[in-house]
Length: 189
Image: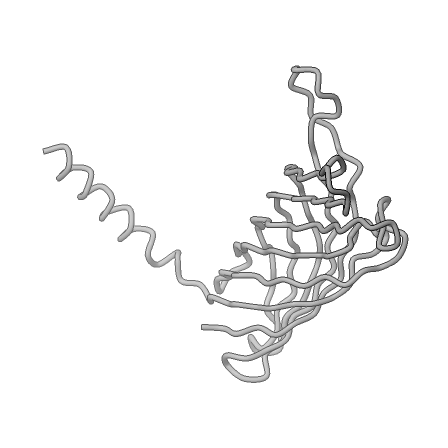
């Protein structure tokens, strides 16, 4: 009996939400530069992709990831390092040019993963750290056809974590922050 009620409830929720779930599904790949961060000496190349759902209205949702090798530099010191991000973002946007283009604001949060790998045999300087991160930015998309277009955006990223490992729950902005500018192709389904 409980399974029938649960199944019926789930079906009613799905049926009621179906009209509001109409959205364009977009898959994009991007490349660009990470710049202007406290930990950066120079801009470095980054790449990644996104899965975006954006409706006819102003709202959308996105899962976006990026990877930057040699994020912290140290090439000449024998350290391999990278930074990866995986963010869930809310998009607020608007269409223009007869729905051939969109501008949007993005805000979200997710994982910022840093890795340092020293070339020593004792693995003394190996660090693999996961932090919560936040991001925000602006961007635009333009479509050449109904299914193919380009996308570009600029976003700011910052990690949030416990500043001291003292077994107390404290949250503060961390030391890793940077700007990222990317451009890439978009496929709309």
